[in-house]
Image (tube, rainbow, N blue to C red; front, side, top):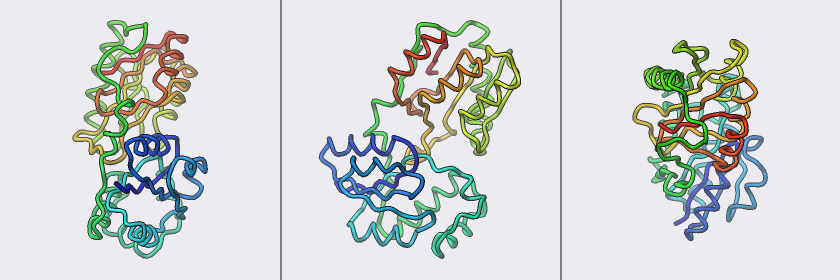
Length: 265
C-alpha cells in the first residue's frame, strides 16, 4: 500500500513510517515546514515539504503520488489558527465552512475535503499497537486509596469536559480540581498545577468520548513525566486502549526513580 503521511511535530510520524515500511508499505511524507523534524526524511520513501495552509498544493501532490490512504500524525500547535498563519484559498474556504476552531471540527472538514478526491484518512493504531498501554499499574508504586479517589473523580470530570475540546487532562488533589487542560497541552497544564500546590497531586488524562482513532490520538511521553516530577505530582492516570505511550520503558524507569505511580485505567 502507498500511504501518505501528513506529518506534524514529534517522533510519532517517524515511528509510524518505520512500522509501515516493516509491513511492506510505501510511505510518502507530506511534512509541514518548521513543524515536522527534518530527520523524518530518513524514515520515509519520499518527502514533500509544505507550508502551513498549502491545502491545494497538498491535494495535488497526493494525486501526483497516487495516494489513496493517508494518516495524520504529529502535533500541530493550535496557536497557528489564532496567530493568522497564511492559508491558501482552498484552506480559507474550508475553515469558513467549519464555523469554529475545535480540533475535531477542523480535522473532520479536512477529511471531508480529501474524501471528495478519493483519499481516505486511516486509523494508524494498527501500526502503533506497541504504544497503546493496556489496563493496569505500570510502576512499582501503586496509587494510595486517597489517590484512587482522585483518579476516579478526575476521570469523571475529564470525560465530562473532553467532548468540548477542553479538559482531556485534569490535575487534582483531595478531589479538588487544580488545573484543566486547554490549548496549552498536558505538560503545561501540569506545570501550572505545580504553581498552585506543594505537590502530591494526581494528573488524569483521557480520550474524548467516542474518540476517533484516525486523528488527534492522546499521547504521553517522557517529557510529561518530567513535568509531573518537577511540579511535585505523584500519580499519572491514563485511559486504557485510547492513548499512545511513547518510550514506555524509559518512562517506567523514570517514574520508579521518582516514586511516581502510573495507572492505566
